Image (cartoon, rainbow, N blue to C red; front, top):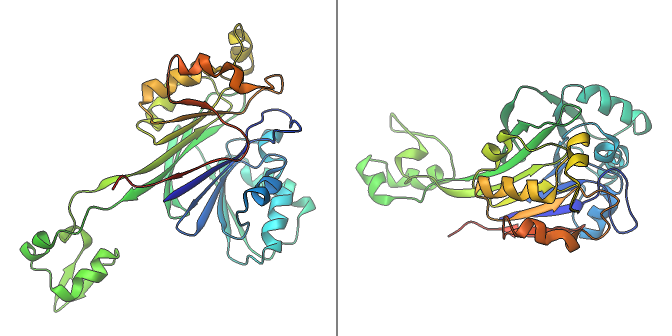
Length: 302
């Protein structure tokens, strides 16, 4: 299972009922945080989730509404008695930005390892998942992220027998180990059928629509995309500030064939985002105007 919570849905500045941008995912005892706007640690407390288990922080870019909550969060993670390393990924400049923010959080009981990403797309393993980063089109360097939980094929005893895999090795191989036994080397692919459908959540914000988003979000179980503007006539404003409208986000969701779309990162002027959701659902019926602490548990199909 993959637990998702959209901790904050606001863009630019917080409102009394809307915190700034952050998403948290939990999988197999590990937590991944994307962005850390002002109020993120308060939202985590309200959700009842743990600071201690945050192993990875993914930063889309370095505008204040996406990173201003980082110093306080790092301190809260330390106060949760964490001693294991924390890994932070972000565009080039991440080490400098995080270092500057840590001026007010200099002493922590755990190490921080910062990894700067570049290029149009890249992938890496973190928090027990595969993370796929893809370049967006904002007025500064910005990345979106997909969190992918892969799922191995089912155990196939007939295949194991056909490959002469000893019964004593079956259990360890099913756990993902490679086994050397009586002079032979055995691997998981010798006992498993084809890979099954896993889980995928794609997150992007602060961008104009680009083809790379459709590619990155293809067949996602959940697509979380910015909808800065919902009102009619806001298209020119969206283009000028390198953001998106509800209609543009819904069009991307339709092209990518995702299951669900959560809109987020609303303009402060868009006080009641749900009043405009019809603009998105007319294009993609699975669209939803997400609110702070919107949460969902994604489960494997079978």
